Image (cartoon, rainbow, N blue to C red):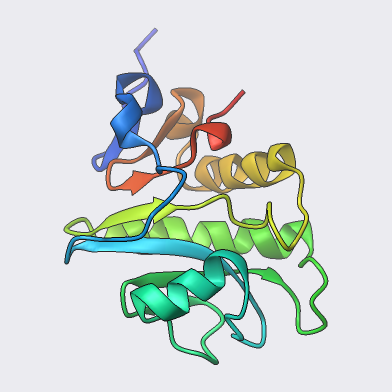
Length: 159
């Protein structure tokens, strides 16, 4: 039987040090670093990490998903400020992972998206992130790996 091999650009979480996870508080970024925050489908970045993304990292109002400034919006709330569906959140994670893999010169800090104002349980968000990983790479999923340039919160590590 052949040992599983990770695709290029992926790193097992077991090979990461504590400094290779998203810190609890981010107030300054280097030029090549990106802050990933939970947004709403109106792109109104008024509270929580979204407010920080807008005020500190130049996330543009009206942009509900993707990169603006040094911030990447990931929708966790719909237009009525209710949590998006699990399928919608998983699909957003999928698009994020593709974007991260396509921008290997940048370092991305995923915050605990959806676990604040949106009210998602950490376990649910973590599981949806890992479902998105599995869609891209069964090997990465089985070996508990993330894109090398994506730092995740410790609590999003696969249980």
